[in-house]
Amino acid sequence: MLYAYMYTNQLDKAENTYYNYLKKVSSKNHQTEMAYNITYSYFLKKNKTKFEEWKKITTATTNSNSVYFKNIELMTNDFNKK
Image (cartoon, rainbow, N blue to C red; front, side):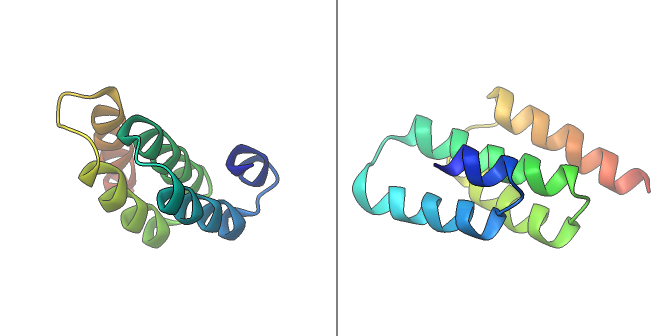
């Protein structure tokens, strides 16, 4: 459901789906992937405030060697160029 909400620009519902998922499942891999996808959605919308919020959530669930972490670094650098 999270992906459907993301791709229909209903990010508030995507966020709620993420938090509901956390109550039911403890898989760090899925948690990180879902948080990353929300982070990326806010990056595409150029919403820096929400991007920063979700960047913290995503990086808290992964390590600095992961592709998610590295991609978020690239997105952060892109925001900082402007």
